[in-house]
Length: 86
Image 1 (cartoon, helix red, strand yellow):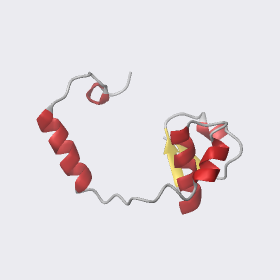
Image 2 (image 1 turned 90 degrees about the horizontal axis):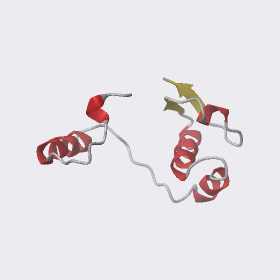
Image 3 (image 1 turned 180 degrees about the vertical axis):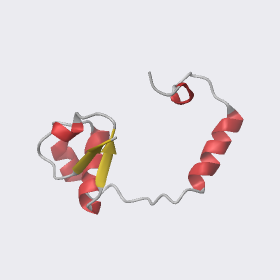
Image 4 (image 1 turned 60 degrees about the horizontal axis):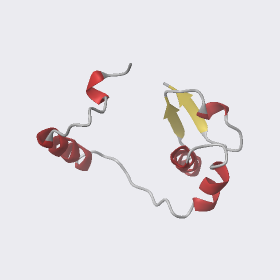
């Protein structure tokens, strides 16, 4: 089930953790504030997890497509986000 390299083992590899942090720091990711859409996240939280609601609100605000592996989020009403299954 899934990529064995991505499974949580409960063990830490300090060197691998350092490499992951270095890769993250060097990636072209852009961070966005998350406090302004809290009322909308709270509204969606009745049908979604807080994390999913935050992702949906961010996708709506950026007019971006949210990529998901499962179809559950795509069928939830009350949001305007575009959901693409991968």
